[in-house]
Image (cartoon, rainbow, N blue to C red; front, side):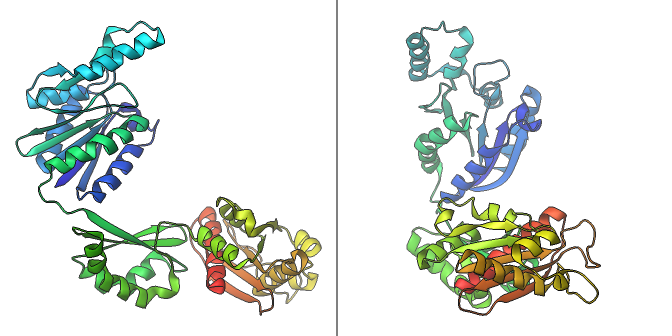
Length: 414
C-alpha cells in the first residue's frame, strides 16, 4: 500500500510551526507495513487543497490528511474531501454530544461554528477524538482510502494510536509489517562507510540497507517486511553479520542512541570517571555529555582553556611547548597530550580528554582550518593522541571534533 501524507495549514508553509505530524505518521505507517512515498504541505486554500487531493489520489492508495478539522472558516479539509468524493457531510452524534456537554460543563455559550467539528463524510468511519473535539475520519472510495486527522499533535497522536491504526489494518490486504533495526557508527564518515558497503547496497533486495548521516555519526537502518519478529531477524541476520564483519570497529550501538549516552553508560558500569580540557571546542564536548540525564555519575566537568595563558596557568603547559621558534604550538599533539595528562592528575579522574585545534574561519599558528588534536589520558596507562583533518564550517568542525573525542574514549573503554 502506497501512502501520501498531506499536511494542511498555511502556518506550516510560513514556517510558523514545524511539521512534526508527518514525521510521526511516516514512522508509525512503516511499523504497520504502509509505505509512505510522498509528503505534501498545502495551505488553507480550497482550490489548492482540492488539487493536492487529486494529485495524491492518482499516485497513492492511501492519503492521510492532518489539520483543517477545526471550527473556523479556514478549516476546510472535510469540506474539500467531501466535495472531491461527491458525498454529503453528516453529523457524528457522539462527537456533537461531547462538544455540547463540554461547553455546558464550562459554563460557556457554544457558538454555531463549533458544531462543524462534529461533521463527518457520509459512508465513512468516525475516528473519535478523546483529547479534543474535532472528529476524525477513515473513508474508502473505489481503490483509494483517506484518513482525516486533527492538526494538534496532542489530538492527532492519540486518535491515530487508538482508532487510526485499527482502521488501517482493516483496509490492508495481507500487508506484512515492516521491521527495522538501527546500527549506529562513529569514527567513520558517511562516504567511507558507504564505500565499505557499496556492493551490499547495490545488491540489496530484502532486507534494505539505508545509511543516514548525522554530524559525527552514521546510522544504518536495516528493514524487512515479515509476519513476525523472529522471521524479520532471520531475514536480516546474514546482512547484519556481514556489516559487522566489515565495520565492527565503528559500531557502537544497535539502537537509536547517541554515542555520548553509550560512553557515559560504559563509564558508570565500570565505576570510572571522566573530565575534559577543551580549547577549540569551547565547552561543546561538555555540553553534549551533559545532555544525558545522570551524566554526573561519571562526568566530573571540564576546563575550557581557550587562550595560551590559561593553558599555561591552569593546565601547566610549558611556554616552550606553546610558543616560540621551534615550539610545537597550542595546536599540536604535544599540547593535547599535556592537557589530558595534567587534567588527569589535577582532578584525580580515571579518564581525561583534551581537544585543541583550529576551528576557523582563519588559520592559526600557520596551521590550517580543521586541524585538530585529541588527547586521552588514562589512569595507569599510556596517553593516546590523535590528529584529525576535519572539514566544514566552524560549528561543524567543533561538533565533529567533540564526536571524534567521544569515539576515541569509547574505543579505549571498550
